Image 1 (cartoon, rainbow, N blue to C red):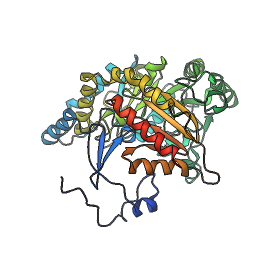
Image 2: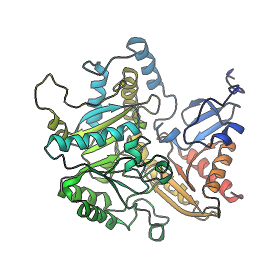
Image 3: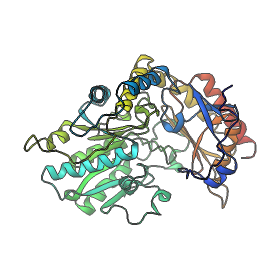
Image 4: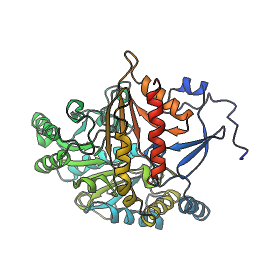
Length: 442
């Protein structure tokens, strides 16, 4: 057994942990010290089955050889290269590989370091594009209630999760929000895309009429709203948004930070739903969660709008110190190769029906008020404890960890997204343990 096991840091106070109940955690720490394929190993030597792909990101499973070796080799060959006025080969190679699997027409890539940065980059591109086209009056951005677009100021402005917004003042101005699509009275226990709710896309027409189309730059939505509890778009909803945006000259941005890289059995959700945005944000599964990296894909029309004026001038004043970092680029290339060589996108599509059956087998469990699924994503919504919202789901999370299962909770919803290498016996274990946990007093 590794010497790292059975040890904990001697002081937990310095690290202010993100999106964590810090006081509760530091009384009873939950620490991972290693991982392989579908499992984590805890500091006390237990195996924990990963039903969340880390944080929606470890799509190919943990510590995959091709990815770890690519990082090792790159670190010893070229550790860092500036991205401003200079480059290195792998950044260009990865961009080409991304374009190859992206929806047709998304032909250019801007690199970031996270989903949050990808969103803010996309919003800046949208605003700058309209100005480059002589339409500087288009400054408004439209998000959606319950949407999650990261934690930077742009992302929380267009996002619609109250707890993420309420502490930070006025945020960006000129932002409006579409209604969310969660209709439990009509769509509870739906398998895949709900039948009801496509008409909610028509609210975009109302918002555009209120502000006038000449002021609206872009609409941003998650094809599947993940972090708010897995809200799946009703049939026809995304196409209606696309049609309205096209009609009014508004850019449509898909936030595919969660849905990208095989989660729905296609490279991107845009392909699953047959709707192509003007801009697409990615991160997470791009490097299998191993190295921070994101990418924003845009159409040639958007890219080319900036390619004018003297050739020695910078066309777009935006970027990051680590844009296209060599080690991250190597990780991205190896990740895409792993997906392709192992047929993981196709595999996700094949096993999704078994995943669906496992999820919906919990329909009869006490306090389960809804089950939702699409691709290898699932949600189990629980009836909140009166006066103690989120407590029932968090209690399930703690009990699952004790029982060797990693789930994620948001509000009183259990959200899951296993690595694409998940086997049927893993799925049986996930839902067998959840049935036991939810049946016995949570």
